[in-house]
Amino acid sequence: DGTDVADVMSTSTDFTPVTSAAFTATATTGTIAFTGVVTANPISAAIDKVTVVPAS
Image 1 (cartoon, rainbow, N blue to C red):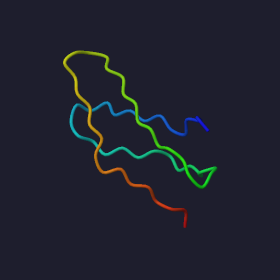
Image 2: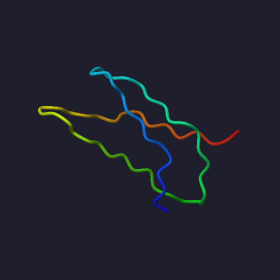
Image 3: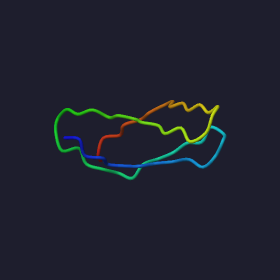
C-alpha cells in the first residue's frame, strides 16, 4: 500500500545490526523495500541477513 513502516539509520561506520519497531502487515502479500541515501563519497552500504518474524 506504499506506507512506510520504519526508518532506521546506523551512525556507525562498521557493520551494525539494526532492528525496526514491530509492525503488523495489512495484507496477505506485500513488498519490503530498502532504500539508501549517500551523503558523502566514497561510501558503500550493504544489507545482510534480513529476518521476518511472524506474530506470536
